[in-house]
Length: 297
Image 1 (cartoon, helix red, strand yellow):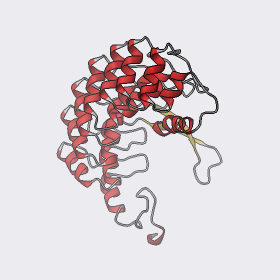
Image 2: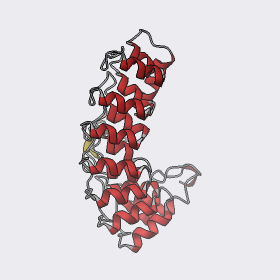
Image 3: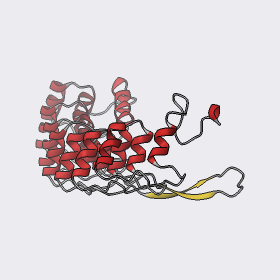
């Protein structure tokens, strides 16, 4: 997401196809003094360029706090959305500038307004270690359990998936739903020798599964201590313990066992955590634990 929006901006900054207003051109070019002068001279504050981007959005992108504050003071539209689906708030979440987040929220920006992927500012920030920015959003009623459009992931899931234990603890403190699962979809999967596609579910990930897969022991510990169900499986029957084992996260696997994870649960393929642990030592380096090693069959 960040690459798509920021690179689009950088391309425009390098050489815009068409000229805008003095304020817009100055903000786009990072010319702080010129932008303030244009604003004082009465240049159109909400003018858009060929991508629908305003001076406020460019100022946020460049983390120009003073210009952002002055634009907001003069009445710039705070929730404007450009052709990429980005808003000042969504760009502020990417840059992580706490002062700009505060300024936008004070001006009435919606903390739960999604970007083009259905992700809120809190979801974007939850992937990072920027706990202060997350606190600012949560203090302005950001929805801790909002879900993005594609897979239904929450901010807590994003934090666990990116191995951010401090963020995980903060979101739990603000009543994040511990055992929420991603959307379950039915996908067609072809079985060898079977001409008919087999409909099998996918998804159903919890924050603990993400933490186990990534081997984030501190994330797993925070989730389990908050009451996460250690044996809650995805639609394929894969438990957090199996995810940890399959991804060489043995410290996390050991912790889950110490907290009562059942080592004898089978997944859809008939694997237990013990089977996966043994199979990891019989596959070639870089091989997949869920496929037999050709040189040992």
